[in-house]
Image 1 (cartoon, protein in one colour):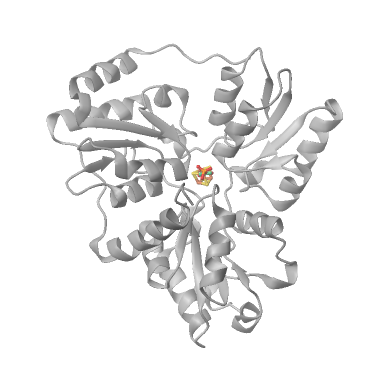
Image 2 (cartoon, helix red, strand yellow):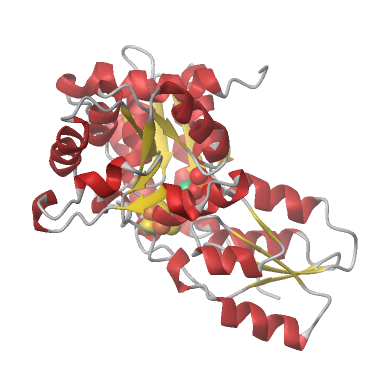
Length: 353
Ligand code: 13P
Ligand code: SF4
């Protein structure tokens, strides 16, 4: 069993500063953040939970412990005059970088030149510039928690969907929905989009961008086979960013919040192997120690999430206290279309629906 490090003097300083800032600051953190960070957060959640929560936060400063695209989306959803701070601006998402906005714009222009109404559906793991392009083309954002619902929504809006950047989330969602392979086409975006076969894409109702998450790409069906061989009673659950053959070999697949609920409701004594970012797995392991046997399918860490450290969080809080902190800014040119793309998701997936 793992044990978490004791609170350091840096962390005591974080708590002192938080106390002195009081209701002027709210700390939110993604589940993939290390324990030394999430223990200071007022709220933790997955991408969807955090996106939903931001508009309801009252404090003038929000510190977002996560990667850049999450802070950007939070800045967009924040109220006027409210500032969103990221402890580490270089904490990005490898997958988000695989879909640059200018390339997406060019690709969409080519795929819709004939008048085809191809609706872009962007995973939340994309830059705000990309969300802006998506909003302009009538599309929306989705997260791993609502990908199926949003793909149905997008298919209803036009005569096809371009899902980006995660080809694995797209294929896994398509499999759940029973979309046949013949209706799916994966783009070749090399040569700045010049390689795209527009007529092949025209025949597909689901067009895929070829991105993926390198952290979730480390899980394999062979690892699952080895785990089952060692203990046939073991249940395996993975994130839908894993490859389709990994999802097929598992007992269940779902978003971060789904994984948490799966573990929460498992019968006492269960052995559960999880294929997702290691910080979440270790936290669940610790939380259910003595009741469940929770293990990582393999240790796979997101190095960008790890760039947020207690030292950087302390520096951010110090900057807020003395007025030198630099909040995340939103490019005014993409504000409206990007906000529309996010709001389409929040509306289509409003909890009361
Ligand atoms: P969630 O949407 O499950 O929070 O996942 C975000 C992410 O970056 C997964 O790698
Ligand atoms: Fe991006 Fe993968 Fe890290 Fe999630 S785990 S933030 S998808 S690189």
